[in-house]
Length: 153
Image 1: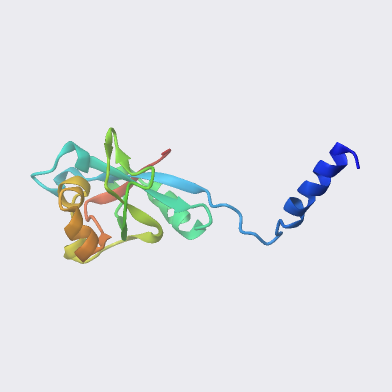
Image 2: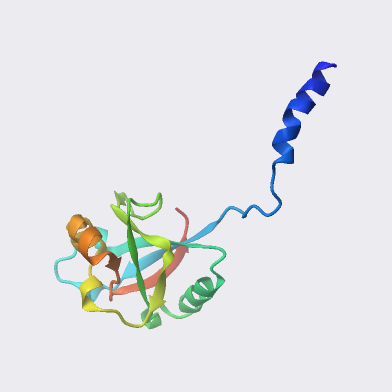
């Protein structure tokens, strides 16, 4: 057997194992979440924004986000509510600050209201009291939040 044929025979099992029903890799849309200035008297610059991600397969949430973005910023009344996950996810930043957490890409939504327990500021509350938020609260639903703009990680 010639060398090209041998190489082809060795590679054949790799291509034969490819499954046609394998799920396509997820792609994400990233959105900067703004925080309204009246959120708290003691906030830091890191509290002004954070970033969330949503899979492009979640067309319902993306449509809801786009509907909010079509409104003037002062009329965007839906707040972000989601489950906290450790680490910045590779994208949850505000300028040079990398948050210690991100919202679960598959478990957050826009809503009109939430309980007060999970309301807070991204840095002053969640980052500065990380263990409490991750172990006890487990969700972040900042009442002052709104979808500010689509962004890139």
